[in-house]
Image (cartoon, rainbow, N blue to C red; front, side, top):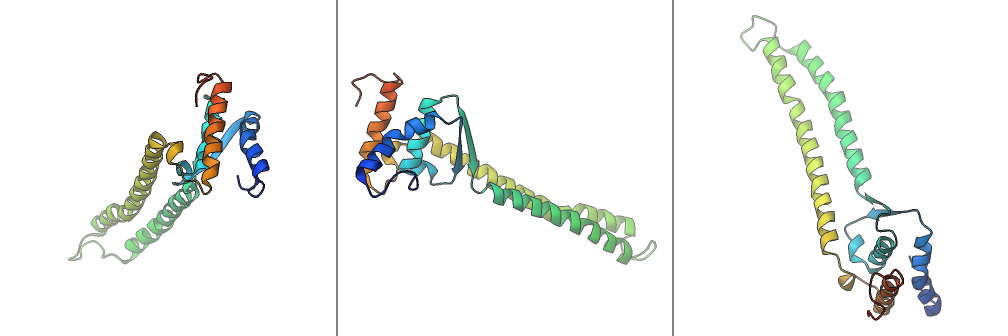
Length: 181
């Protein structure tokens, strides 16, 4: 928003804030690059609230900013397993004792390798998916509890303008009564 709305000229800033609904009205979808501060900042809450008022059933795409990291970590764990498993199995086949020795048979040793080798990778996958599930639950929690009144605002003068703009939009869409403040 700092790039789209003037930060130095108060009149241009006011017009930019009041025009946000007009810009969004010409959008066919909204992409949200979500982080844990998204629903805490006045401007992002204002954009989201305006879009949802204009298009209650609109195409809202929410992509967490950590999603690429999650995908990369999953690919890394998969690659490591697909590389390490055949290598370690090969080593086990060639360096484990042969049949008839006092130690475990080769077959029993390979069964141990087949059982234990995937465990660290399974733990890695479980950790990644728990991380993903935790962040999804945090997003849902923030959505349930977000409020424009508690949003962070670097310039408190903007809060009044934003709140008035939302009231104006809800009046224009006949969501609230004309005398709503």
